[in-house]
Length: 426
Image 1 (cartoon, one colour):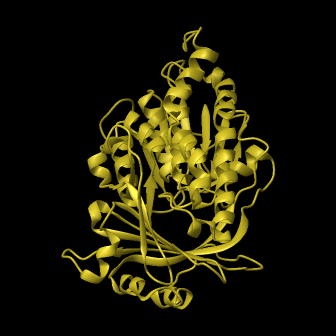
Image 2 (cartoon, one colour; image 1 turned 120 degrees about the vertical axis):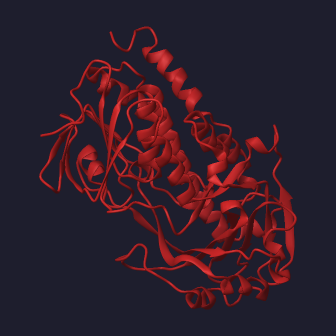
Image 3 (spheres, rainbow, N blue to C red; image 1 turned 135 degrees about the vertical axis):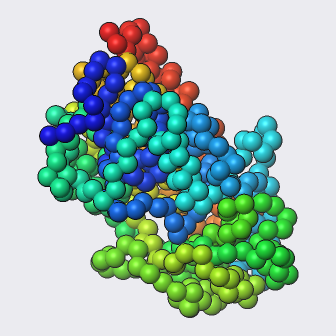
C-alpha cells in the first residue's frame, strides 16, 4: 500500500480518479490549498481533442479564481447568436446584453486549450505541491470508508480524500459510492461532432459564419425528424466547432462514440439550405465522431466516507445548456474552498457532507433543465422566438440563474457558516 506523503494534520493525501477537465480542475484547486494530489488516468496520454465547448461566465469565475490565463484559452467571445432558417437560409441576429463589457461574457474554447492550461497550472510552478499525473493507470476498486483505491498494477493507494471524476460511463468510484452500477440512459438523439479548420483569408460563401455577431450559428428543422446544426469558432477564430443533432432511435447503444464522415453528415442534413454545404468541404482538424446523447439519472448520494463524485460521474447531462463542463468546474472550485490548508483528515467526511449539500441540487437542476431544453428544441419552438440563446426565451430565467452564480463565493460562504468558528488545524 502506497500513498503520496505521510498524512499530517495540515496536508491531505488526495487521489483524483479521472484526468479530464473536472478531475484536473479539482486537482488544481486542492493543490492551491496545499494538499498532495495524485491524478489517476486510464488512458496512456490524456488529451481533450475533437470538440470545443462554451466556457460560460459561471465557469470563468472559478477559472479566474484558480489563476488561469484567458489568453492561453484562445477563446472567442460569445456575444450573441444567429438563428438561420434551414430552408431559406435567412438569418436572425440577436446580441446578448453584456454588463461590464467583454470581460463578463462566455468564451468559445477548444477543449484541448482549456485542458493544457489546467495542466500547466496543476503541474508547474505555483502554490502547493505540483500535482502528480499518472497515465495508463486504471482504478479497479475503491473502499470509500477507508479512503483506498486499488489499481490494475496491484497497488493499493491510501488517501484521506478520494474524488471520482471518472466520467459518466462506467465510473468505478460511482459504483462504490452509490453501492450499485448506475448507467446513463440514452436520449434517442445522436450528434455529429467535428472541428474544421477555418481559412486564413475570407471566403465569401462562408462569411455568414463570422459576420454580424461573435457567437453561435444555429439552424433547427421545422418539421419531420429532428435535425439541428450548431457551429461556432474557437482557438482565436482559426477553428470551427461543428455539431449536428438528429433523431436516432436506437434500441440498444453498443458504441457511444463511433466514428463518422462528412458524407454521413451530408446524408442527414441534405434537406438543409445549400449555404451550409461549404462547411463540410473545409479541412478536418480532428476525427469526426457520432456522440450518443444520454443522461445519468439523479443519484441517491454523491458521497460516502472519504469519497465523493464530481463532474459527469455525478451528473452527466445533455449539452443543451452548454453547462456540462461548467458544472464540473464549479464542483472542483467548491471542493477547493471546502478543503482549505490545514484541513484535518478526520474532518473529511463532514466536509464532504457540506459539498453534497452545496452542489447536488444545482447539478440535478442543470440535468433536468437540459432535458427540458432538448424537448423544446425538438418541438420546434425555437423557430418562433427572437432570442439569442439556443433555447429561446423560455430559458431566460434559467440561463440567468446559471450565469450569475458565483460558485467560489457561495462555497466560501458555506465554509464560514459551517466551519468558520473553528480553525482547520484544531
